[in-house]
Image (tube, rainbow, N blue to C red; front, side):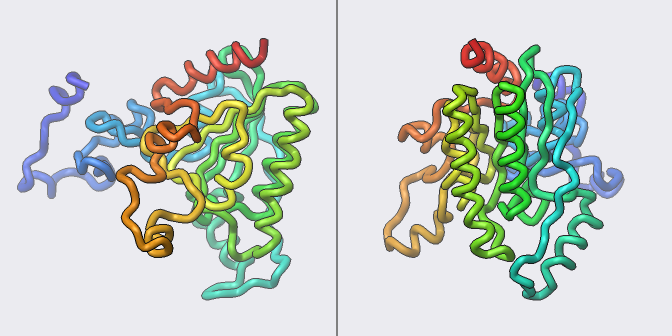
Length: 279
């Protein structure tokens, strides 16, 4: 941290017009101006306050898998339009637009690889695809990740990052909570370990199903985790909420989490857990 402060001095306001666009990023928590390389070197966290920026499944795979080697599966699944839904856009047009703009195909990616020599299956969600919303494809991908884990007899890790159910699929989306929970029951019957990692945010139907069903439930610091949002709850009960309500630290204190792990320590802690659970 000291090295970065010396190597990258603060920039005066009058000099900022000379800085090339896209080289700096403002921390959402403390407001610090961070050089993008600085952020990348700290695994997309703020070196000043520890704030964790949201990252994609691909970045989680590169952080966690040994030598960044992994095999992706179930990548060809695409959302259908069972309700023929339309708001400001038709649902198929919205999906096509997000795919064209982001290059992402859905809000979940599955991969098989090794962490510290332990073979694992990881299903990682992506907030960058329609808010990480859980639709039929996400539920099917989670189910297939569980099936792959059972088939190979290897531990499962699900990285949750979602605003909840996908409204454009209505009840089909809500059914994914029961579908994934039932699949996880099968995993438990086989005594195969399941580690749930909750990141910011893990809300709605995601938190009400597989995100909270891990043998070990862990979270990144300050992640927002809950069902309904704090503003909705406050407006409903007409009372002020406790400080830090629905943040990871609050949930850890009240027994909903087993541990909070900084991203720089995540792989090491998972290796430790896998070593215990696999044996």
